[in-house]
Length: 481
Image (cartoon, rainbow, N blue to C red; front, side, top):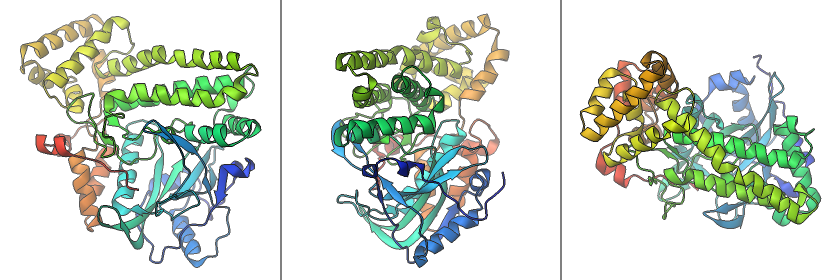
């Protein structure tokens, strides 16, 4: 794709009523220094990386006059409704790539906005490098996600539990419209405002729905299916978002806001790493239930524009939500059965997934490594030799594989769906700590490994080892705000 000499933005979001946004200007960073630029991504979307540097220089000089803005939104945070908004981020503009696709470019950590409440609007270098690393891992795992264009140090100190190096990140997304945006519209705007937001969302993200008999109902149906696909993909790779508030559910179906997220090591559906999730609301195994709950909140926001008759609107919304369980079961088991070599999902095979997960939990087995080991003879023997229950499961599973064409057909399916390398928490922490201290060797090496997570080589071994028990049971991730 051809690169552009300058960043030329559009601002379609600003066609919405002004109550949906606030014009903002980023904090002037006195000593900005780029520490990581995603050169390949920049060039893939037609941006010369040097333009990001020029943009920061222009902001520093005060000469930039574009329409920077932050978005208003609300959200249920840990089940409680709150009015929110972009407290430490602003959208620089909408970048259009060569094929016509539109992306928000957001600057996160840019200082206080009108929505900042008691926050300082800043971000730490460790948190921004973490977002860069995890979002790249998700992308290479084949999971829809925001991307990071660049991370820069701001040249100031940011105070959280301790003094930290300040930083900001350029984030790329198809859209930052979220369930919380619709909650804001439903609670604080007019019916016409809500309708404008809905049709803007359809035209921007799902224009094929505009000619449906009821585009609003079709939007609800589409979002349910997209979120089922996304969260089932999280489950497939052992990803735990950590803060599945409604304001962190993008209607574009992209994973975003990589705060207290992590990848599970030893399988346990109750696994929680987030320091603020005291009761396990967003534990690994709760993610399907929570996304259904969040989608129900989205459906509620649409009631005034779903149908003129309130009772009919409620019934229509309920009918769509009622489809969730069936959709989830089908998509979840399809992806999990892919992990053990079955191309198509049959309910008669579901028990194989249920049973191996129970045995993994009972025997404290690593989620990622166990599925990988099933794809090779040596690994299967190691698992079988652990105890009689695992041996019997492997024997039963192998019989089903034989009945469906054998390992010659199944192994390529398994290799495509089972990552070998994930961002292991203990390695991520070490890589980030060393990077903020000035040594980026491990950070760059980890980035290299997660750029091809489904391939194995001898150098991959050290990135496959789970942490020891003491680390795993005490490890916590943090929001960063």
